[in-house]
Image (cartoon, rainbow, N blue to C red):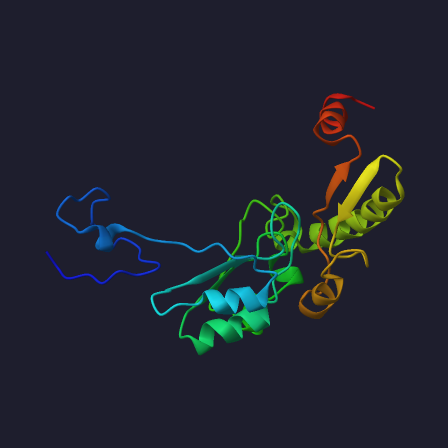
Amino acid sequence: MRPCAPSHLRMRPPGEAAGNAHQSDSCRHVTSTFVAATDVSELKRSVRPEKRLIYIETPANPNLDLADIAAIAAIAHAAGIPLVVDNTFASSHLQRPLELGADVVLHSMTKSLNGHSDVVAGAVIVERAQANAIEIAQWLETHPEVAWVRYPGLPSHPQYELARQQMSGPGSVIAFELRGGVDAGRILMTTSA
C-alpha cells in the first residue's frame, strides 16, 4: 500500500478502484467545504493547508449569484491552490475567467457556448438571447405577479456592479419567483397562453 496523507480534495488516480479495501480512508476520502462564493472574506477564512482546489460557478445556478473571480484567484494563488471556474452561464463570450486569474475554466457545450449548434459557436445567438433577456427581465421586474427577479443586467441585482466589472454582458439566464410561490409556478408551467 502506498502512503497517503489526508487531503481536502484528492481525486483517485487512473486505475484505482473506487472501493479498494486496501486503501485507508484517508486515501479514498475527499472532504469539501461549501462556502458562499459571494462572501470573499468567508472563503478566505475557509482556506486550510490540506485544501487542494477552489471551485466556483459564476453566475451560479439557480439564483445567478456572482463570485468575484479576481479576488478569489488572489486568495487561491496566495495559498498555492488552483482556482477552477464553471463559466457555463456566461460563456467565454461574456466572461473570461482566465484573464481574471482562474487556472481552469469549465463550460457546458450544450448551453451558451454552443448556441445549440448555431452560428460562430453561438456568439450571434448569445447576443440576441442577451438582448431578449434584458427586455424580459425589465418586464418581469415591473409585473405585479412577480415577487423578485435576479438578473446581473438589472441594477436591482445585488452584484450588479461586479457583473459590470468582470462580464462584457449579463447573459441570457433570468431567475425569478412568482407571488404565490410553488403553486403559482405550477400554474405558470402548466397553462398555455
